Image (cartoon, rainbow, N blue to C red; front, side, top):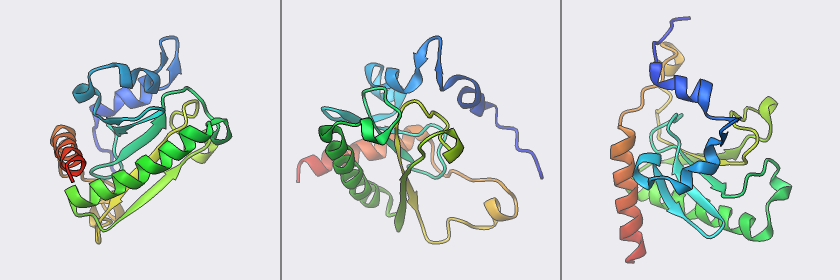
Length: 164
């Protein structure tokens, strides 16, 4: 297998977890929205861009509360998470013209959760042909747009949707 030098991933590998400084996902909503790539804050949950995306426009929807289990969500949190997932698939489709989505949650490390102690749902936009030769043969994923440009586009589309 070829190796791709990706020094920007060290923050994910070493720092984004529950540690002596607390949970990195718990601190996101209190910081600068633009820096932290927060797209929307609800009453119980918020939407943030994944800064280590599987695909362009990869978002996470999560509760403010630091909980790991789906059944620990309150009824209000469950409703708001589902409403945010629904509205953000619409916004992503309008902004990025994607053809479909992977929406899911990894419960526990063995299920693939990188941050298992703070429940979060993923929304990954998909396009026809987005699994081309690069990830299949080159074992490399190409993300064609910067996080900053994607954040601006999605915030703009969110504001346009509020006016409709």
